[in-house]
Image (cartoon, rainbow, N blue to C red; front, side, top):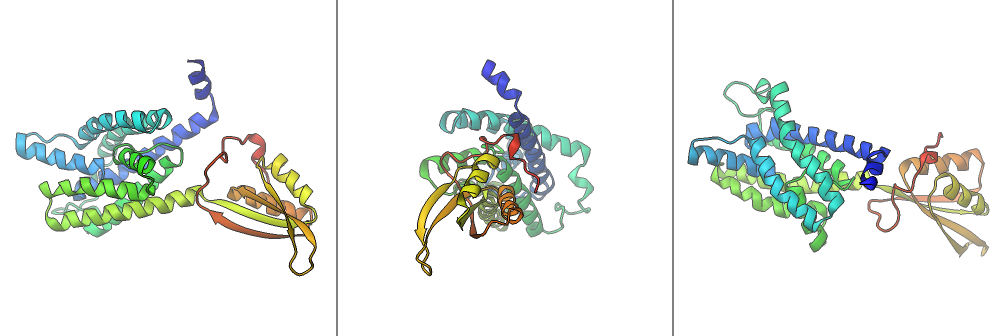
Amino acid sequence: MNKVLSYVATWKFWKELIIMTLGMLIAAIAVNYFMVPGQLILGSISGLSVVLSKLSLSMFGVELKVSLVVLIINIFLLILAWIFIGKEFGAKTVYTALILGPMIEFWERVLPASTFIAEGSNSVMGDPWLDLVCFVLILSFSQSLLFGINASTGGLDILGKIVNKYMHLDLGASISVAGAIICCTAFAINPFNLVVLGLIGTWINGLVIDYFTASFNRRKRICIISHEHEKLRQFIIEKLHRGCSLYENIGGYTGEKQIEIQALLTKDEFAAIMAFIKDENVNCFVTAGNVSEVYGTWNDHKHNKSTHLSI
């Protein structure tokens, strides 16, 4: 209990809570304004919920609210998340999954989708392809935000994370495969062309997730050759609070032995060290490249307040 209370008191907890809340608010926009009105049955739990909602009307004469169906399905999937992925992911996804339904209800009450739909149409943008593009971009952005803090929007994301963990597929590919299966349930309520549209959207969703995820996780791999390598090493370790590696190499032109420093930095840290090199007039040769994924002990949790540098 003490561990939970101490964690709740940290900035990390509140920052991630804000990110999760905003992420789900964005996801609810995609569902309420683009998926539900246009009946875009992409491979998602929200899409499956639309199908089940329409089937309940045709079979039992009662149309269940999409927000209610989303909540019911997510409760089952949350149990799977807790068992197969981990407690942290499961706990965060419990929060995000449980607030998706209320978030959809919030947008329905505050700003109904019918406000933007012309009479005789069921599309906010007036074209199903434009609705599809808007939906995919908005939802993928939300999903990527949450994946970045080891959370998810719930539903299909849980299945995607399970496939990603145990089959080692890219996260976007995992979601596309699971989503395509769900998407085919739309044959029960939608014509063939709309189902194909949903399948295409599911595939694009996976690609955009990988793009956003890579962008959010991007780091700079910096290589510096300099006689003043000790000054640079101290700056990286003491000011940036990052590790680095030192390699001895021989210059091909001069035959002189030199030290090369390599480090993985965030964009802000890269800007900080480049400013330091300029201000201190350090004579060096620098190369830098982007790294989209980092595994191992490198993480943001080692940082403290002193890492926020003014440059």
